[in-house]
Amino acid sequence: MATRPAPPPLLVACALGIEHVALRTGERRARRRGEARRPGAAPGDWGGGGPVTLLRTGMGPRAAERSVTRALAGPDLARAAVLATGFCAGLAPGMHPGDLVVAEETRDARGTVECVGAELLVKELTRALPGRTVHTGPLTGSDHVVRGPERSDLRATGAIAVDMESAATLLSAVRAGVRPVAAVRVVVDAPEHELVRIGTVRGGISAFRVLRSVLPTFFEWHRNVLLPRR
Image (tube, rainbow, N blue to C red):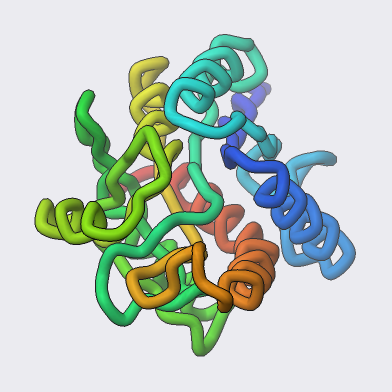
């Protein structure tokens, strides 16, 4: 009797230690509640679609490129779906810390990568985090923290948010092989709520709590993008 090949794993990449802590905390909560594991999943397959690895890449596009390329070169993650996550700066007026951004595409000076299953992610995030605003659109990359007037310049390109690693992460992923990729970010910094302001601490706590809660939605995305297309 032929053995079915193991489903591809999921690589969830973030940059900062605080982001990694939020995701690890969320993973432990999901394990305790049984949210992450589906009936019939093999041990360690907490997404129901294959093993899940949380990767801290380090800050900036170069660090993200190095870490993701190295991870995907190993046999365990060679076929992995890749999802970039963490915090971001919102570009559109009216955005608030704790809002979610689901990328339709990521872009930087080196190219654009189309994301897979954005509609599914929006649906799952809306269900899992009722009351939280979910924005969709292009997510642009930067090699530095964006401040002041630069927001308007990036907004004029059509981007709705900016971070330093998502574009590099997904570009490195697709260059390493054909695979589903996506990016979900939590707004920690927005036009009316810049990091230099007093409200930063409160906004940061809100963003941390949201990021802590999103991992089960990534599992659901992973499981569904692995289904055969009809």
